[in-house]
Image (tube, rainbow, N blue to C red; front, side):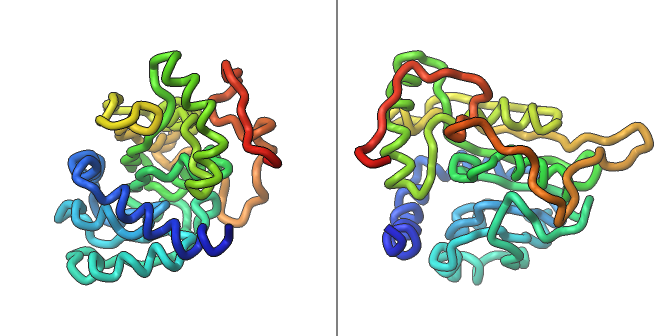
Length: 246
């Protein structure tokens, strides 16, 4: 599985997530980014062509060397400077309040502790800085949700830890961001995979005008997450299904 995950899967994701279906969503998610941007889950750089002119520098966080290598051609055409600065969105090697904007597309679904990743983004954003997020996740229809839970173990095995049962809006609100705009709807294609949420959320500002306190760089991790890694905070899925030996 290691060869598949490290060498094969990045090419599959680059092809599947680089189709015309995703382009308008990526463009809309990137609109309004400015200055220094931290992008977690940079992947093969599928957002690079959508950066607005106001973006000066991108600090990319991407665990896969293969995926980042696939971005080479896109990086050569990028007017913004892109630097790979880390591997783990749950622990960013950046100072507090050092980024003007944050971008996260189709990434929280694969992060083991998405609440930690969002806490880190909140920490490194300047007071009032904005998080631009695009994610697939839980659908509003019970029948689709049931299928998402049936398929989730298989999705995790084949998709490098990707989950269909993420609640992006709930996670962002729970992390202390103020959601300023949100669009959530089916994007077309099989419904368990294509209920997309695109949002812009503002990092908090404390009463003295500074960034609200968060988990500083190098701090110990927070308490363990719920059993099984359920990202929906207390939701009991209507169906349980597992691969043999899982």
